[in-house]
Amino acid sequence: MDLGDMVVIDHPGHPLHGFVGKIVGRRGYRAPDDYWMFIYVASKMRGYLIPQSFLRLRDGENNVAGCNNSCR
Image 1 (tube, helix red, strand yellow):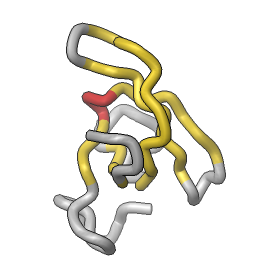
Image 2 (spheres, one colour):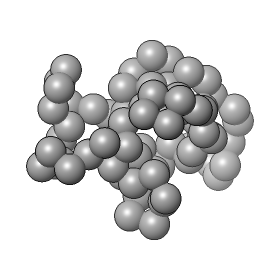
Image 3 (cartoon, rainbow, N blue to C red):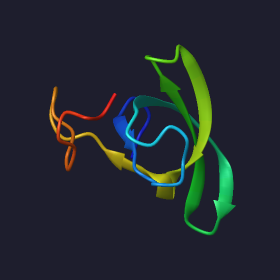
C-alpha cells in the first residue's frame, strides 16, 4: 500500500467497516510490520488513523473486492 491508493476498511469490529478511503499518510508502527495509516474517507469528509492490517486495496475503479454493493 502506497500513498494515494484507494482502500477499504475491512475489519469487522471497526466502526467504519466497509467504507472506502484514500491513503494520505503513514504515521509509524502499531506493531512490527503494521503501520498506522492516515486515511481520508470522503463520505465522512474526515481523516482517520487506521492500522494497515485493517485495510485492503480497492479492486478497480468502481468495484471493491469482496463487497456486494454494500460498501459506502
